[in-house]
Image 1 (cartoon, rainbow, N blue to C red):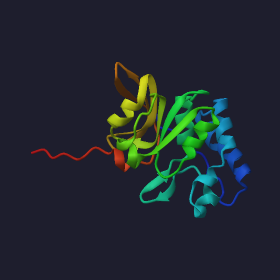
Image 2 (spheres, one colour):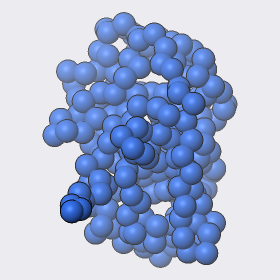
Image 3 (tube, rainbow, N blue to C red):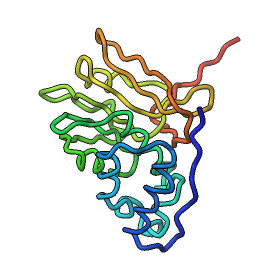
Length: 204
């Protein structure tokens, strides 16, 4: 299934009005209707999580470049991720960031207990005293790092973007018997995280 995008929000629009228009013209029409998800997105000022020069178009329906090859995914990506994950109040959530903590702020607005780690530091991350109920990765990966699987509690959930044969999809999984299997879902454009790309191998 391919998720289509909606009309863009004009640059320079009032942030509150742009946020409401983004919810109505991008999220709701694409099936993002969970009340808690929309409340969080309506509350958190997305324009505060992008470079100053990009604030005028923080609510357009495409990724926002953050520099150094990184990007903040389009609003629809975060709406779909949160609709799939549905973080619950009091859950321990680890958000893997890639230049912006916007997704972490959304999860916190939904009442979860949030830790965040930059994608570049995932292999050095320590689980802490307790494993996480949910891991959210703010971008598309080719493989789930062992460090993130280890950080997840048994029966815990992971929601991420997943690169399959050059196409990015939303994907979710659950840790069962110590293993995490990702299930590809909707096809949607998601910035690829270079930190989680498989090393190329040669065959003869």
